[in-house]
Amino acid sequence: MSKPTSTSDHLDADDAAMLLLTAGISKAYQRLDYMIVRNFIGGALVSVGGLVTLLVKGGCDGLSESNPAVVQLLLGLVFPVGLVMSTLTGGELSTGNILFLSIALLQRKIPLWRSVYCFLVSFFANLAGSLFYLVIAHYGHILSADPYLKGTIVFANDKVLVPSASTVFVRAIGCNWLICIGVYTAFLSRTVVSRVISIWIPIFTFVAVGFENSVANMFLVPMGMINGAPISVGLFIWKSLLLSTLGNMVGGGFFVALVYWYLYVMPTDGAKDEIDMGNESILPITEPSTVAPITQIGNRAVPLSESMESFKRRDRKFRVMSHDANSVSPTDASRSGANSDTDEKVE
Image 1: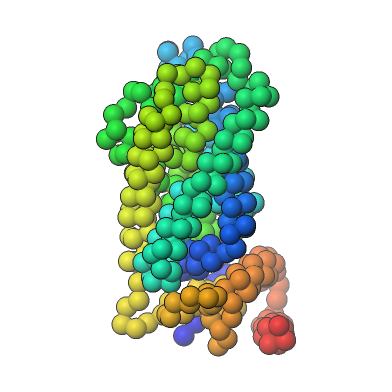
Image 2: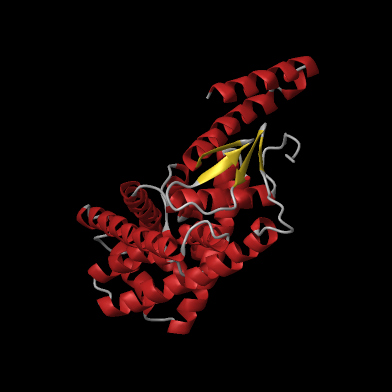
């Protein structure tokens, strides 16, 4: 039975979790070229935030000595710009895909091999995008003079040489726990402003406290290396990529994906949870599809891409309807609902 039509400006936590599942299936079965481009752009845009972070870090050299906490807060404020741009424009990151793919895998909507395959494509496309933007920043001489050049070296050393391997791993757990909470809360939101705030808060937090993000490290550490940081390629791969990635997997896959899958997605007593999207519900099917993943809208089984487009249309209609809700009579509302149902049948 469908839930009553919601008039709030956000989804319930259980509805958002089901939407994460739908998105996870969609991401797993998207075309390879789309997957590569989206993750390449995601890595490049995160590097934009990394570049601004290094500019602030280098420019606050004196303040770092006298009041390092203020510098950390400033870094936390500026770094999320890249993640916000990536999220709003459809870019993808391997750190966020850990959440999507894990929920779909736990619900047995995708096989293990596909989740591993999608993650590896995401990871290496992120790396390619980050290194591409690194070339732009380096040959654009953005950080080629002190104090910025010195700041890149100090930043890379603090990421790789100072902490132990176990410290990097634990920090990476805390990092992606926060990142995936940001992704989850962004799915709760229906407006751009609320989505931006939902993303900004946890990202600000993980940067300010010094957690480890594997995708951010793809830009931040190599920038210090090409400017003279005494870090070998092997050490960079071991600490900044491998250990950070493993920690990110635990943080996002266990503390977010597993927890909220258990609370909101895992079937109980054969019941199926629906996602309230205005006048339409999106209901994931229980049988996994190996060719073209599908969902159920109302009484129709449709391709997953159609269900996502339907959600987008309903989301836009919701914002207009909620704005005019107080001025619409019950009779008009009934007619509008009938017309909407007719339109869906035509489609």
